[in-house]
Length: 321
Length: 310
Image (cartoon, rainbow over the protein chains, first blue to last red):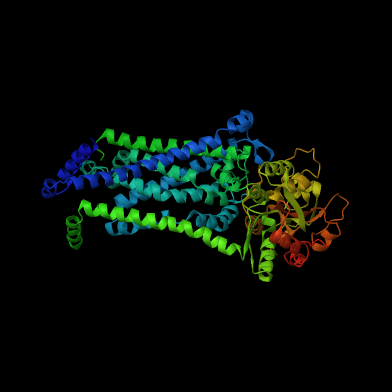
């Protein structure tokens, strides 16, 4: 049965891909090896999904007990003092959200305008230089950026803006914006690339200037791709740990006002990273940290689904690819 | 052009059979090599076991430099002993000892009753040794004019009741609070002995605005460059570019600067013992090592800015 099935598949593939000569000389040995290789690839492919599922089940197993070990009033309270069994996760969730949104607010205009410049305005030779340079940005290790943020950006922010400390949500947002820029730029650039030439030609033929073409036709036509770029940048920002831990000050306070941007915050990732080494296996604190891991996992999952739905929307609308 | 040609050659020559053989070859090689790696390990470790023993030592960041100095000096005198030292915080070291991964835990605080219970549940009965004394220095930026504070004032500052340096005789600047992370023994000691002022019924906590720095270096770099900050750390970690505050138990003084002498005579109020915990009564090499720390090793204690026992 499986032999037949494999043979059938092999024939199909060979008809499509290989030269006619190869297709005509199918032997039993070849189809068997093909089946073997294929199943190897299949197992490897499925194992990736399997690992994700295993990680999720591990998170659930270690994190869910916190729901009955800690009362809900405590768990969703506003104070995080794990040494004294006070596990209010609200300041951490808000802290992560605050820093991420601020980072995207900085990175979105920068990233989209850079993408527009690289794709639509820059001459060919400049594009050839800029694109690899932008990709190099993505390769800088986050701990290096964190060190730079701690010793250069934080003092600069404190002295120029005259705030009590430079280790604040703002400094963290600046660093995160810098880190999510390469993602946003390259995905947004792809989206602009996908806008058909006929759109530009039509706009120019109607007498639109280059600026009007870019701003009123090309960018709106690519907006679902740009939305995806923002989502992927957000995913990068919310999961970042090291740089954030080094520059945000890690004070678990509630960031409720706009002015909180210049106050320290504590993010979920920094909390897990800073406290995981200390906890005894199986303690309430240990389960609480895994609970934070579940929240992070779900948040990035939602962000990725939103990004994926942006792609589907683009496909369904048609004409833009 | 060139690459295209090459590719077509590869395409023609590389039959599925060849690919299959290649994969089999790789699998076979890994089957031979991987268990080989596994086999070698126990052999070498048992070989070494006859000559050298590795003592794993982990815990308090306050103690880590001292523990390293001890380990280096001891290994020089006893080449057959191998001591590895890592930091991470008192809680980290004690957790590692409870989990059975290290034989010696360094701590800048006493083990909590629940930690002792967790260790007993794992079949380990920890034994405590006091190995040195340490003072907690309260530090500010050198440009800060404040010279001295009472413990009550420090407590009020760290709980957020005093928010401006002007209230304690300084300039009109907001106070930025710096602390170590909550896994640090120094954090717990400072909370119990300074913020709660040794009152075990007190429920005072660090202000939520306190910046929790992941390392001593994080604290010193922020103190160095920010005139609004106040921080605390072990005396051995205070560098020349931080200003040490004189501390007094009550308003009438005396205000005392921390030093080996003032810790020894008991006049500096924020001093504490530093501990080493072993998993069970120490035996063999570990016993010799601990005995050496308590006697010969004490000369190194003063060198690193701590206070020796005698």
